Image (cartoon, rainbow, N blue to C red; front, side, top):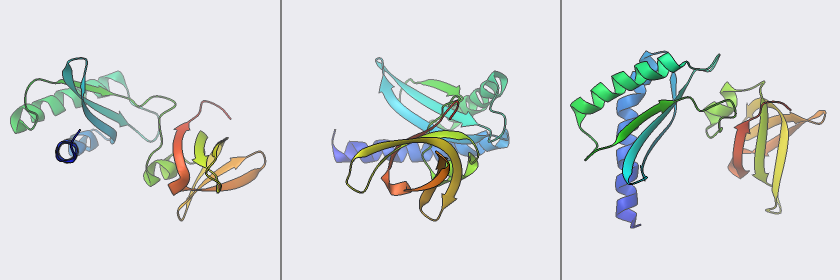
Length: 160
C-alpha cells in the first residue's frame, strides 16, 4: 500500500470520527474506536461505543446506528457502498489511550509490555490508573509502573 493511500484512509477515518463522535456523545456514550476497512469484498465502517459505567445496550447501539446512518447519508463522505456496524467493545475490551487507562481504574487488566531488555512480559492485576506516563497495575501484592510507551497490548480481564 502506498503512503498516499494510507494517508488518505487515515484522513477519511479522522473525518468520520469528527463527524460521528458528537452523535455518540449525544446518547451519553463514548466512541471507543472507529474502523473503516475493506473486508469480505466490501467496505465496513465499525463503531465501538461504550459507557464508562454499566456498558451499552443493544437498543443504544441501534439508536446510534440510525443516527449515524442518517448523518452519513447527508454528508456522503464514503465513496461507494459500505456496511455500518455499531457494537460494544465487549467485556475484555482493548485499552489503547491514556483515557482508557484512567477510565477503567479499579478493574482487572492484562497488560503485555516490553521490559528494559526488549523482552515481552505480561502482567495480570488490578488497574490503578496512570501516574505521569506510567500505567499502574497492582499485581502479586505490589504496584507495578509500566511505561505507557512500552505497552504492546492491554485488555480488561474478567478476573485477576
